[in-house]
Image (cartoon, rainbow, N blue to C red; front, side, top):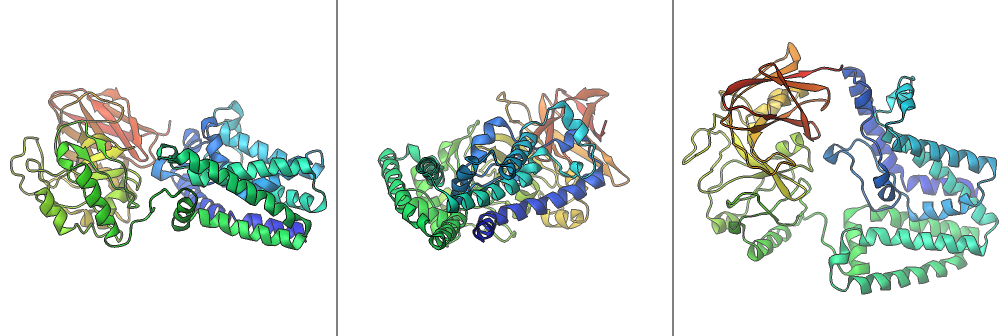
Length: 507
């Protein structure tokens, strides 16, 4: 009975992660079957050895593909790790050995994408439905949950002082991870706070030992700790824990009216944007640090709306910066370029971009109709000054564009731009002109982009399936760089008009 209740406690403490992973798995199975993806596509993503420490600790949310992460990270809670330590002491028993072997093999499959036998395994039925080795995290979670239940059963039957000491040490270390994960070491008095927290957790852990003498008290204790584990994953309560233990931290979601504006005002007062600084806000309304731009120009920012209708900017912010507001950064753009790829509106007295793109005063860069200008920001560093071309030769807004392309995801291939600052390339390059984009529904595996440049440019295009794309220019092959998710790019070393051809080829 105790083992059954323990299994329910442990599994329910991680159920929301398992269900999330399964829902995304079903979607990827469907996409894989429809597009006939090859072996290399199935092998992405995978877990690396460097990510293994964060993979085993609570409070650290791994993300293998940026915002396009396709699997759920394993979350080992306090109860789970505590009971697994007990289970490892009985490894010689057949039942324990079986689940430990299942955990080891599934973790090995997540960590080893380049083994020669992986290609053979991905030709087997059922197995090949796991698109990416990281999908074996489901087997890892299952085996560890059973081990946790078996460990709790052992704890009820027999408990040794040595096992309890080891379990308490693990309990202390794992409890501290959610509290100090977000760079609290740089804050004043953080070492004193950490030391005090360690002592507090140590006292609480030893005080809980008395509960283990009665199995009913043990179950109540496990239920309480499981609730605490789940609440740690919720941003609001997690912030409460961080404030309780450390006195530090910021709210994760700044939805309250006035709180967000006051925070922005404080940052603008400390480091004004007129000094060439950039303030970024991502799709979840999280404030980031201020990062320097690679070029000297004042920059204005806009915040994506919570409801997808574009932002509502405070009137004092418009007046204080003395800038004309043109266009907006809507939630739909964040969705197309993935929510963790920040898109910042580029606006000042010389470069004024509007939603319709009719007339541009004092523009020194070549442009075409229906264009918007933005800066792409990744990891708090500006990586590109971009020009989005929703549709050539017309005045099509983003709302119309999304309505037309909603039934066909391939329509996002029309979103193309030329960037002067590509990722991992510090040398300044020229900005060119996109004169035409040719894509036919009858031939979706080919996209033609006509460009005009006066020097080396970096053409960035959003392409589905993100692999197996090949690019040529005047019959010469170009290397396709993966920028982020479905976004790819190529260097164009030309000084005249040319046509870049993208073709989707499996082999």
